[in-house]
Length: 565
Image (tube, rainbow, N blue to C red; front, side, top):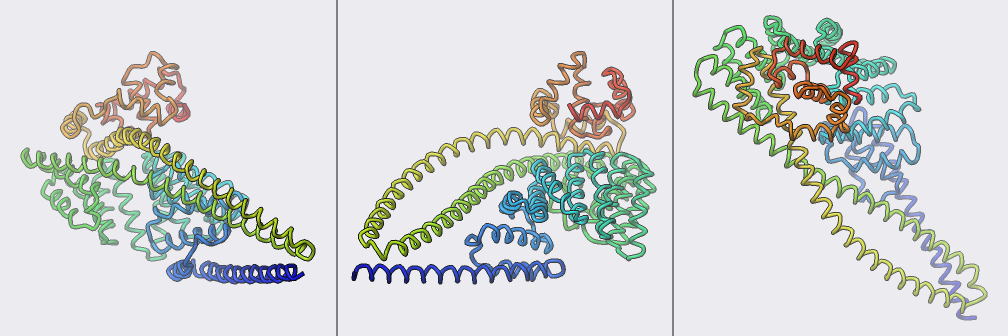
């Protein structure tokens, strides 16, 4: 009887302890709920304060799944609104997964959108588009026009990065329509800017000017000199591409007058220098070019590459081969730097992403074990209350069984630990192999991307294709466009594109096949001309001949077919 009373007292005390723990947990959850509510209220106008509230949670890993998902969604929104770099906020994946599985359409759309933006910051356009399409599907069920506008705006940017300007234009127009419905005038105007930019990329000058003018009309009413200067700079670049140098200079000068920030000045100096060089004012071109190193973004290798390429042309115009050669050496050094930076950045990112995915798995495991433990404790207590009145020996037997179960669990954990170590070693081997393959692939892709950039710089300023190819080979060597290595990359990126074209059209020449590859990879006609050694007029004739040879009705049908192969 004494033993029976003893175990009853133990049971009651245990229940009180569990009740107290649960009450403490509820108080903790209530406190977190208040923090999240306050952060959400401050997010739009006071993101710094919202971020402070969110960061006041000391142990976010101890939050429930719902709270943990909310924590990362609010944190990344606050980071972006405060201007922070969000590329390290990859644990937003947890929020995207949780809300997607919970079918919480609004939060799932937001979480997947911000996951996409993290991949944008990582320059992973493919994964960004994957999450944007998921976000779009969830957002369509919410009827939230502003959210849909933001998603389609980012989809447009993804297509723009891939130089698929038709798809980008389509997405930006949809975004503009949603922003118009939500009466978000500021974002609608920014979307109109990009619509104009897409028309400019397609050399549809009249359409581009129509949308640019709408933005300028808005800036005239609001007094937004920064936006006005940006539009004038875009127009200057467009006129430079069209070889309308007087108009390009006019717009660049207006831009410089409205906004004297370093970012605008860097590009305006570049435009003005190119214009004056084409007009024969070598000294004027040199003056503006030499002003570029004084700007904020000068530390970026891409900016330096623009500058030294421009100075090389200026020295050539001055008939100063020695100085031009020095500039060429600088171009080579910068090119190597860009290659090395690209390769060094890719490998740590892959490793870091893997580690964070492992962290997510560990968190899910801990949460699962915690829930199972709570359920187990409640079950044991209920069982003890039911049986403690009658059978003391039964309680003792159950205690022995629990101890035996604990020993079994320990043995099981040891087995799992050994398996985890073996799996880690296996994953390490796979990771090292995948990293080597990825390095080779990135190296080949960087060749194409840099070739495109250099082609753009040279083609916009000169129609002398022969001279460009000579300079191109000086800088990069005659084997820069090594098609034996490039064809496999194109095959890998675009689902066996080269093999399919060869099989369907076996009579195509190498130049025909290379032109098809450039079209599929998103190169503009002027870039194609420069890299294949044609004039712009010749490339148009060549493309027309190829359309007829492949038996298409028009160029649009030819382009659409290649993008779908």
